[in-house]
Image 1 (tube, helix red, strand yellow):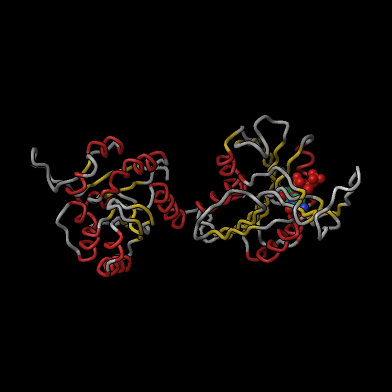
Image 2 (tube, protein in one colour):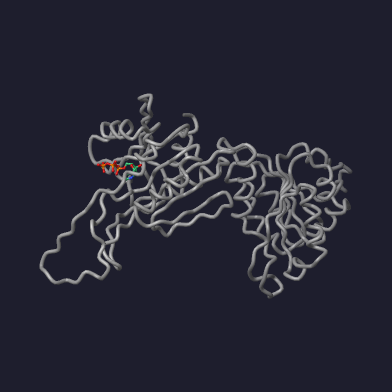
Length: 396
Ligand code: CTP
């Protein structure tokens, strides 16, 4: 969102109080924000709040009554990369659908050069009214993107559909809009493995590991933000991620993970294998709970398939990224894995570094590629690490 110019139009609904948070989020994401408000919206949020947070003057009237200066709505249209109207009331929606322009915001909409996205907010009966649905269909046909209202408590005290989408959801929709237009992975497919695998011992027990899946989920969200279609195949984790270009596949064991990878691999452009796959599984899975009879319990293990190695053997044009978690001689072992698994790059992390590894929100990595370039990064939050990995992968 760095440097993106967002023109934010605010209309007169109670959800306008949330716009302060939205402006903050937009500014934090690196966007420039200018705001225009309908006169009615000034009853719900003060233009002073809006101008202070956006760090720009706010447009409300066609002209300044003190100075006689005209507010040029055409210039707003030329300035913006995106026109976002939030909240959008039933009244303003109806005017947009029928080309009215009795305020600055609507005149700007009619002279807009860039795409428009709206976040409607109204009471449930208004939101479901046939005229609202008709008007919504009209503006969508005109090319406006609609962020659907959400279900929940409404200002009227009723509960249902009509709440404006939360500021975080609106920001995500805007990021997605730009990702689909300009993302470096637009039109590309990425398969990601994440999390631990659980290898069953009996109906109630398994062998697993401490992987949280965070790295894989961060990688998925970075790839989505770059416009990719993502399949995230994950072992058991509490994490979740929603996106209409994400297919989230939950598995338990290494064998289930391999079978899902086999199903999708040939259609992918990239593979990022961050899962902490169990190297071995119990040879025999007991049908019944194992009873504690003897003082010692011996379990035989058999090697699991190496999923990453399988993908390396079966890659055609795909770029393949693997991970190596080492405790010693990290670069040496990393290099060996890169070659033996036919990878394009490998992300090496070592538990020798404080703050790196499974249990942390941070990680410290080095990247080694198949041209023998080695690049080491600082200790960073996992979301920033994911950005470094995806950046490197795209440059490859
Ligand atoms: N991996 C995999 N399937 C396995 C084991 C590992 O896909 N059965 C992948 C991991 O997702 C990771 C990479 O292989 O991308 C390296 O995993 P790691 O456990 O570090 O290496 P191994 O090859 O298993 O070797 P070792 O455990 O002996 O270090």
